Image (cartoon, rainbow, N blue to C red):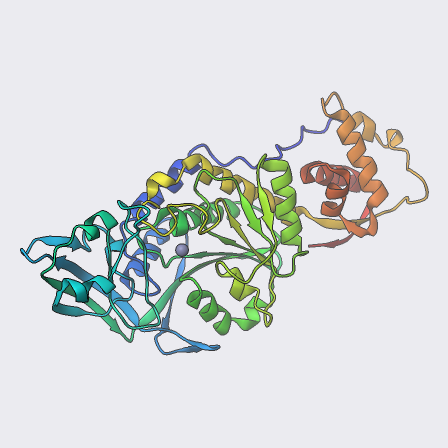
Amino acid sequence: MTQPLPSPPRHAPSPDAGRHMMELIERLYPLCRSLTGEGNRKTLAVLAEQVDIQTHEVPSGTPVFDWVVPPEWNIREAWIKDPAGNVLVDFKDHNLHVVGYSRPLHETLSLDALLPHLHSLPEHPDWTPYRTSYYQETWGFCLPDRLKAALEPGNYEVYIDADLQPGHLTYGEVVLPGSSDEEFLFSTHICHPSLANDNLSGIAVAVQLIQQIQQMKRHHTYRFLFIPGTIGSITWLALHTDTARRIRHGLVLSCVGDAGFPHYKRSRRGDALIDQAVAHVLRHGASQHAIQDFSPYGYDERQYGSPGFNLPVGLFTRSPHGTFPEYHTSADNPDLVRPEALADTLSLLLDVIHVVEGNATYRNTQPMCEPQLGRRGLYDALGGANDRKERQLALLWVLNQSDGEHSLLDIAERSGQPFHMIREAADQLFACELLAKEGGT
Ligand code: ZN
């Protein structure tokens, strides 16, 4: 009996995946997203061309735990004219020029009165910072420090044509049912305007994941949330407390397209299967990586991991937020994102899914000393495979550890072998009735 060669340990996405993700990022980049508003709807409409996404609208004023869904913000035009009447800063050149959630305004101000409303980055004088003021009504502009430093005294005309009034919070959701109602959640934020790595990279990888998962036979039901940060996850959790209880594994995706190496922040539980699975995949699939313990700071893992939910949801990034100089500035543009980094992230996440889908616990049906593997053709099955010794060891590890207490992932970890090798050994032993299934994950 000849067994097929093992599937490759890395789930290589199609060679075009990186390019498709870059194209999506470049297309979404100009849209002015925020917590709410038309930019978010347009973003979800673009995603709807590629995946079957449901768009949900939650009215402003809806109470969600200790929060309230905010008014909807839409902006059409904004600029500052200098004392000579020249346009100094214009929203239509870059949407980062206006502080997110700025109130409407049309005034003429002295330079001294204007300066407190201008934000810049002296350490990067050519970059425009990203600023918002969601929960305190104000207005402001962001601009390169080189421009701000050159302003002359005089009267400046300031115009912001925006609405801040009752509307809706918009979010997108994709559900891919599995054979079980146990859920695997992927969550990514959609509230950042023209920023590429922080925001758009997570959206692009999530879309590719959906396209890959929908072709897979799957145990878990996969849920993807495209939500504004913080208020979006709070809103979803408040409206879906029962559904949330079905989440067995989850990952928040952000900053997944830069050239940095992968970072994983564990879920609040720290020892959940998702924590174990991501650590395993990174150890075998990423030469350089870092794993950090949970902290209640960062993205929506804070909400999923609040004590009332305590869901096993970790944070997957490449360079973590706040650690790269381009973070929350105009330099976080599509040039910062690399198609090969996006493809590597996608591949690692598919490996994580493979582990979580394939993990199970077995019981050795012949536990009194080792069964004869040769008699069952199991040594022959290893054929001329060049990793014959590792495959033989994998069989012995699975037999030895399958006492109903250790999952295949536990065995992979203890043996130092990659999960796929242990999974294949278990399949062979199960086919020979040397293993009986105790439970899946
Ligand atoms: Zn951000």
